Amino acid sequence: MDINDIKTICVVGAGNMGHQISTLCAIHGFKTICTDISDEQLKKAEAFVDKYLPGRVEKEKLTAEQAKQARANISFTNSLEAACKNADYVIEAAVEVLDIKRKVFSDMDKFAPPHAILATNSSFIVSSRIADATKRPDKVINLHFFNPALVMKLVEVVQGPHVSDETRQISMDLCDRIGKVPVHLKKEVNGFLLNRIFAAISKEAQWILEMGVAGVEDIDKACVFGAGHPMGPFTLNDLTGIDLTYTIGMEAFRASGNRADLPTPSVVAHYVKGEYGQKTGKGWYDYSDKKK
Ligand SMILES: NC(=O)c1ccc[n+]([C@@H]2O[C@H](COP(=O)([O-])OP(=O)(O)OC[C@H]3O[C@@H](n4cnc5c(N)ncnc54)[C@H](O)[C@@H]3O)[C@@H](O)[C@H]2O)c1
Image: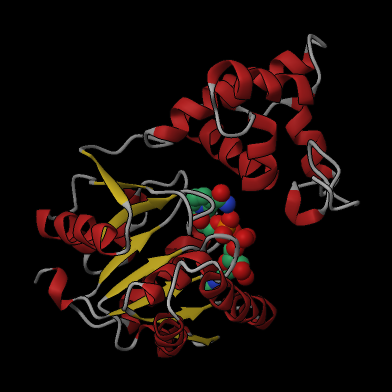
């Protein structure tokens, strides 16, 4: 099998990442079926597509014909079975909870054709912790997109010991086909590549805040104007979700037993108050006036 055999892509999860990955695949000519357990999320995802595609035409990034074709390529369903039935490649972007991912992969394995590759967009969970929930571990791989997935070019393709070279190659080629820049991680490591680097920066930013050395805005400014980052660590964290930072920290602690991996007290404080960032209207910054 090679990339030319990939015609239909199923995206599981229509949240922050899933709806963007689905849109991306549809724009690049793949028949794309987006599925979620939440009808509300599916409606939101569909509404996004209906607004996003005409917007791209207005900005002259797509022709009217390309937008029309992309819209025709994408469909939405709350049935995982129907979504996976004819898929050649499945990208899971459901919540970052190991037990949920294992159950979803076991179901994907039941419903998808035997040749289909099953990828996870997990930020943290390596695919060897999921692959044994399926009967095709050689076809279970990490395909890690970055937020916002429609914009960010990088995708990390993580090849655990169980992953075949064919699965890795098709996954890298798929990234090329959807306009991304894949990097190959030759072994599994928690947090993968770029997030390990950025987690260190983000955690240090939080400790600087905890120590009262500087405020959120000044720390962000330092990273933007001193290090040339496109946005500061707190702005970025409000975009990616403080809930995800919390979950990743707890997962890392469970795996390592190292207290340094725990989320910082300020992350925990936001998490327990349900202040996850932009998606809840408040995080490190307040978005209630929608100016930020
Ligand atoms: N947010 C980011 O910046 C980011 C970046 C890279 C990777 N990721 C990863 O992508 C995945 C999704 O993250 P997100 O930010 O889009 O989360 P999200 O909370 O916005 O969306 C998750 C979606 O999964 C759905 N879901 C839950 N259980 C499901 C199931 N059993 N079957 C189908 N759908 C189910 C939810 O209804 C929700 O719509 C996570 O694994 C996360 O680690 C996130």
